[in-house]
Image 1 (cartoon, rainbow, N blue to C red):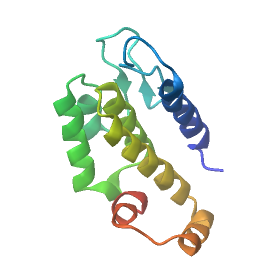
Image 2 (spheres, one colour):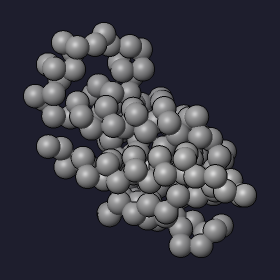
Image 3 (cartoon, rainbow, N blue to C red):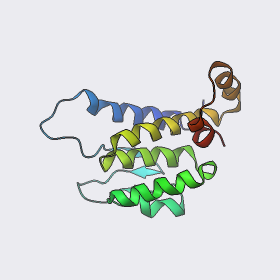
Image 4 (tube, helix red, strand yellow):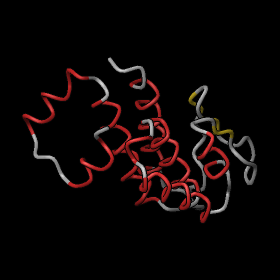
Length: 141
């Protein structure tokens, strides 16, 4: 089992909970802690703690949507240099700034990248599905 399986399972559960809840106010932030990579801000408006890579940390810890999108653009430019946890933190931060559809894409890209980090999973994956353009860019190193 990958070392990232537990954090991804926790993140998946926490990202899914708001989908079924009906609240008067829309969800603005999901409290998630995945040590040592990410810790949500303790109060609304505060910055989260991010430690996924020097070139991404400042952008991903910002509360400005344009900074989160700039981090996404850096990742898209060089996806093979990015860890699954960086992709997961990107998904969390996109969710936090209201870009929910983008967050879902990056969550699943992170999940598949983590799964494919384990060589024994690669053969089973390629035997059961055709590789897409998104797979080629973000799930394979």
